[in-house]
Each structure stands twice: as structure tokens, then as C-alpha cells.
Length: 97
Image (cartoon, rainbow, N blue to C red):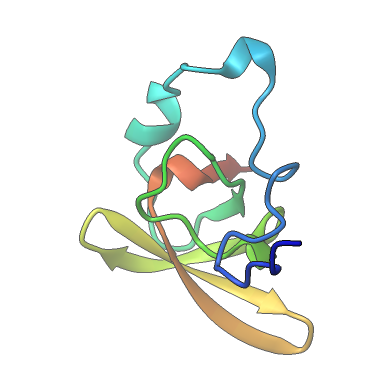
């Protein structure tokens, strides 16, 4: 029997799986959306884009844009009673009003 993996993407088969209609589709509006500091965003991981993907524990969390770091955005997320910063590229973010 094989040993269990302990990598960063372990157990993400259902989280990162796309629907059949969404496969091989690039959501250009999600990539090109201009975010400003103070915007509320949801972290939704895109399994087709590995660059700038935050850890899977932040899948579905909402946060506030705190700044820009290169092509990525710094998002302030509350994880329990702690405030954490997540660096994610715009492919993995969705704008919330």
C-alpha cells in the first residue's frame, strides 16, 4: 500500500475540480478585474491556475484587499479569532459587493 501524501495540495480533488462546462476556460474578467484597497473579495481557488494559489484552507473565505504585491493582492482574512494575510493572484479572487 502506498503511503499517504502530505503535500500542500493533499485532499484537494473535490475542492479544485471544475465542472465539465468550465474546463479549459479562462475567466478573463476575473483576471482583469481592477481591485482597490478596501474591496471585499471571496477566495475561490481555480485548479487550472497554480501560480499565486493560496492554501486550500482559505477556500471560500472572504476578506478585504489590504494591498498589492507584484501581480498579486494581499488579502486580510479572519481565520477563527486570528487575522491572517493571504497573498493571492486575481484568478483566485471574486469581487463581492
